[in-house]
Length: 108
Image (cartoon, one colour):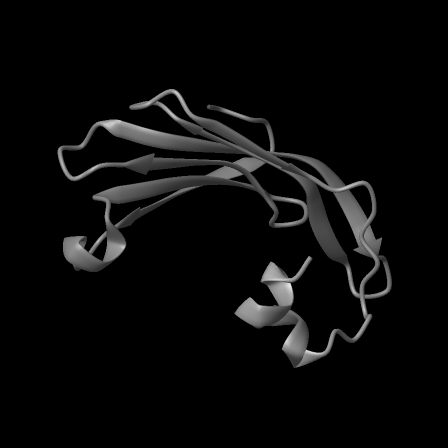
């Protein structure tokens, strides 16, 4: 992917057992440093997953803070696809720590 105004970064794993992959290639917008695309490669060097990041929104103009409202991950080896899409992001709202416990998340 060669996007105008994007920088390509590559990271190689130091410990394959922990990282579960060989390398990660990330494209980052030059104007706001938000990811636009991330490629993950397996231990054999084959393309494993691709994450596409879209709908970038400036959520805190005074701090220059951007947020991606949509992320799509495609697993090229099994055909699975996951999309996370948010309608709205409101920064600066305190969320209690107990919100992130297994018990809280699994309640009906």
